Image (cartoon, rainbow, N blue to C red; front, side):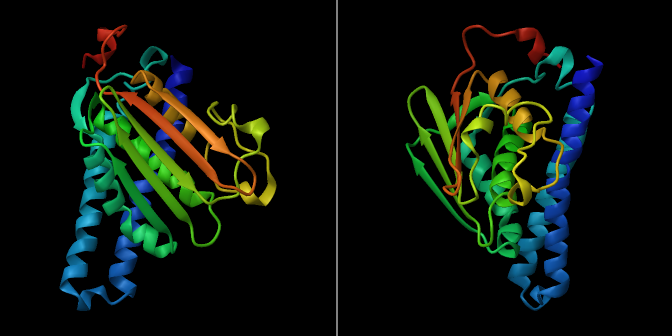
Length: 241
């Protein structure tokens, strides 16, 4: 239990950097890019900062109380969520980050019903994590593609980047705790090697699957799939507050 909580705290230390960095970029834009001369743009950046601070509050309140890795499993109470709405809010919050990194982002949807049962905090962090990885590991002018597909029983999200790609021998290991790809300068981004392990844990706790399709020089595509309803073999105890 202590090991899981230590892993979780280290991981969240990494996760908390994302909203903090986004707020910092928004404030930097307000100071340096003359957006104060544009009331509409000023309001937009302040809205982004406020949304990220709200997310930071939720994360600290609901996650850092050390409940998520109790007994090695996620601890959450399922909520009725709309994954498309979560993605749109994330993309809106990251707008200033995309602008700073000169990143192009394309989001496509197929289907009409994007509702599911799950944890808003954890699913939000999963999507942030996948987009953050796409930004970190892309070279100049990142190109990120997201595609959300809704069927009768499942939702599938694909996040693709134009980064250097992942060698085949490491693709099964990237979801292990603390694993970092030993590939020299092309993968020199800082971190604890816990982001994708966290993603895998969240996906598993939602009875979903996660897969990676990548090759050196051809970018990387992560695919996560979730059932819309958490039925069947479930452990109700871990969903109680």
